Image (cartoon, rainbow, N blue to C red; front, top):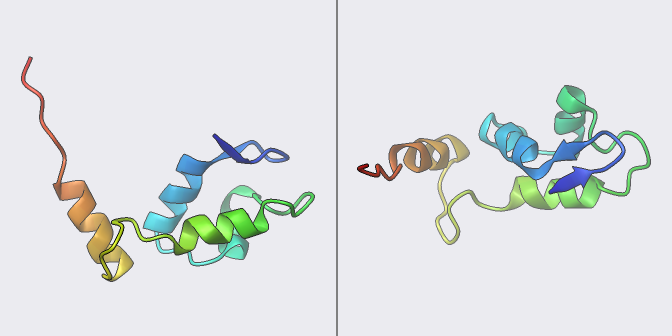
Length: 77
């Protein structure tokens, strides 16, 4: 799903930026340009950034990313 249509930035890219410690649309804009054209997506970017990576759990972002990455499901084929 595109969050910033003007710059073709997807929600997954914003999630990656959040995982790297970015805390605002301005910080995201510095990396990928999202929110810098028409500005309509700035609130949505901030909302994505503020949403916990693990719902209901209050942890430091780095802790959340570490937990999320360690909880991968392995499928046997």
